[in-house]
Length: 131
Image (cartoon, rainbow, N blue to C red; front, side, top):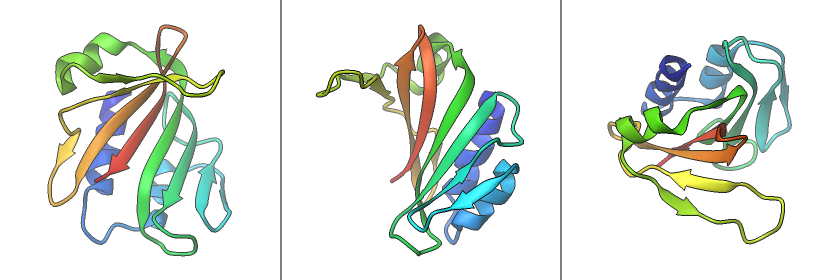
């Protein structure tokens, strides 16, 4: 599972990457709404749904990628790889606690920061933010 996430992060970190590049790698059925592309289901094992969000509506440049996982990813392996995360508590009821990891998942011309939405004792949604 984490290898697929790293592969996506490597692509997201590249200069010139497009939303279409990410959607192609995710495989599966997709729906382009203009501001984002929903991929449901994906062709990646363990990832049931993905959302590729554009930097601007109608532009083919990705801002971030959200991955909904089939099963919660254990938090300890993420911390051992990416360092102790900062915990961000929700300001609205029903929203998940988020963990923002300090060590970039990928560090190239663009860094990719991993943010995990916590539910069911693990990371249920992973957000790959292009910084």
